[in-house]
Length: 384
Image (cartoon, rainbow, N blue to C red; front, side, top):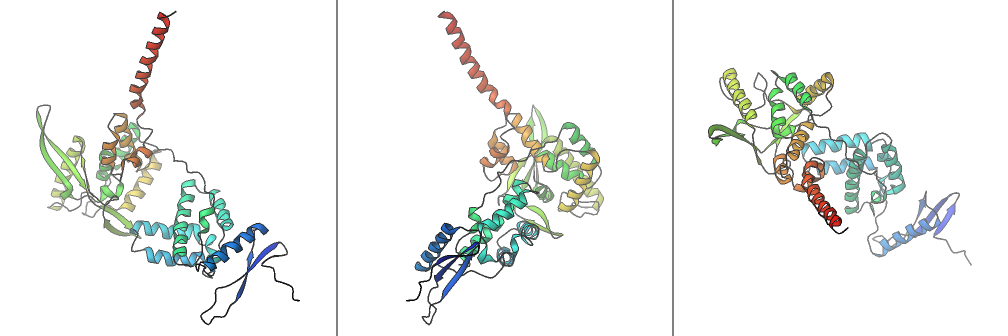
């Protein structure tokens, strides 16, 4: 009598499983043997049960020979029309930096959680938790697509341990730092963009995307005196992808109006007159160089890096946005108004980022508690 084949068996230090594939179109059946490196006997048995269950439910997918990198490239090609140009460019960059040559060399159908955990652990040695989590998030979305396409049975990135996210220290600008920056850009094409970011809390791409049609003036009575008040409509972003300038909508896909401080109104009105005198007419864009060309995101980024190094500044260009939010919070401005001014999609985003900016708002609560303790102490003295 022939010896019955075992479906879970060991060769050397590796366990193997054997199972019968679904019948082909002509009704023939075929067995498949699969190695389970890194798994013990119980784990190999569990993998066999999962495969047999999938075959029974007609959801079994044969392992693919395509590599993770090759499939991710196909996925990125499909997603290009759905993603914003800047997001797609970032994904392509992250693929080259964190996927290709690393976990990207694995066969998609044989990718295991243990492979991904080794990849995560290796990235953690040199990258911040946020960067590692972003790289994992991109890969996870790609593998989810492979599951939906029935190329793989399950997403192995669901089972890895990720580093705990720690919000980076938020550095705001000091009065001295702001003064150094203002002096450094005075008379350059970066003068107006810096004033706009500093005076409105806009994102860099929003400030550079402003046109004069977005600048509104109206006369108001302030303390009995008629003054020219201004506002800006934020309704587009100017971004740069592979050196090419692109105009797109705002991050929240809806415009917002920002009331301007009088100092910024005066600066913009003077700048408008300078543009008219220089070019004989008003340019479409607010932020331009002497030849009338719009200031690009890459150029201001590089210029600020040099200024930051020269003056030993501790804050980033984006830190000017944080500076305004912090000042508003410390002045008891409601978080809902700060959120609206910054253009966050919802108030919870503002609360999560700027939980530290309203320490003085607890003064009232502390006073209430102090009054309670004083009453209790007084009452205790009366009953002695």
